[in-house]
Amino acid sequence: MLDIILGTLAVIVIFYMIRHLYDLVGLVFMPVNPQNFSTVMQEITSFFMLFEFVIMLVRYIQEGHHIPIRYLILISMTAILRQLLVIHEKGTQTLLLALSILLLAAVLMILSKFGEQFHEKPKK
Image: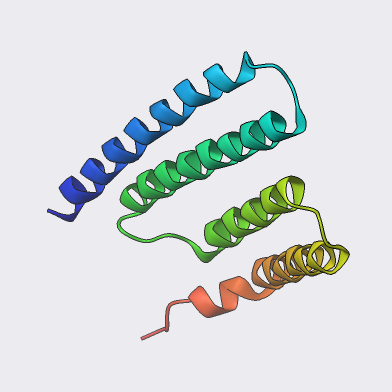
């Protein structure tokens, strides 16, 4: 039952991805000005966020209803980087976003080094 609901959710998200792609194609052929460029960047960001969501749903079903923490950290790093590329008005905000990427990279490194210790099955 859960797979059916998640499959339906994936189809709905794919529908919105197609809609965003259609809007994006229309925006690309408009005259270039700062407002249009900002809108195009936001549409591209929205499209890839929806794409990542579909991939996460598929991965959840493939992994037996479990998403590895490493995968979620990588998605978070990608989302923060995308935010950093689109919105970079204030220096402090840019610095905090960069520090959050660094922190997630450190967590990823710690998990790769010590992660197997937490997943070992107890011996009987």
